[in-house]
Length: 350
Image (cartoon, rainbow, N blue to C red; front, side):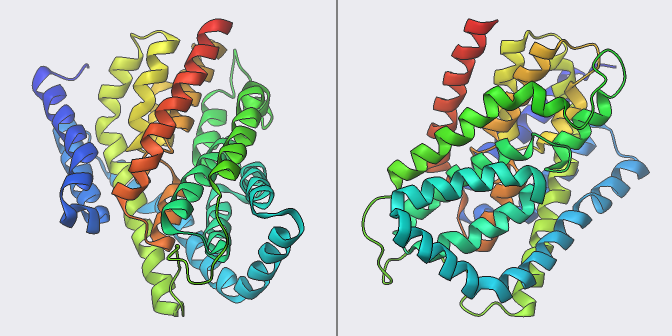
């Protein structure tokens, strides 16, 4: 049954609060996990979709991600000196710009194998070695997270979004297998990853300086700090699961009536919602491949715009203490520009 007018109004208000309060109220920005959790409860309540299954999913879904963040935190803490030495050798051998290009592209390409979470944690360690100004490094992180988000969607092992799509489309007429997303998206994703690397290389300017006020992880990462970060990621993902489920009826109702180009722009809501939940709500086997492609590209590109947009953003921002406002100041204009370029190409090829 379609949501009623009051339900639609309530969900629209929740969406507006999620979009604007983190950038206008400092307390909300500082306690983003708690705020999103509250909004998730509100969205599910307004939609009337509370169920034992939903509660269990919200409790269960973040567990693998949080455990990966926890385990990788200990591994990367031990490997930090080796990572620093490797990055310094790359910069010395190729120069800063070329090294940044290689790092961003490599992380995007391998994320479909090592998962987006591990790629984001590796990025967080790598970026601190560059010793650039904070503003520059925040931009590089946002670009690298876009590259990781794009690349991870090429296989079902890269991120939950890809696994859900393959599962939903495994029957006729698409008969999706592990290569389905690669065949569907590689002409769009690979140029995007390469282009992201080029933009990152162009941004990486100036001389490395050990005194630069760049991004830093905690100087001594204690077990408690690593565990707290994993807990924050758990709460973040749980909140997005609830928020996505609460808003899914509205997204499903809207997507069913739209052409591919409209769905593409509609999925800019992925900037604040879980893209896997949106994909699960919107995609049906009856959709033609051009619609599925447009839908997925809208989710993947817009996911870079805000911290909640995808798992790499969440992990990197948590580890490097990047604030919502400084992320959005660069990533929103970047995402809109890339969305426009891809839209024009999609319309030309339609």
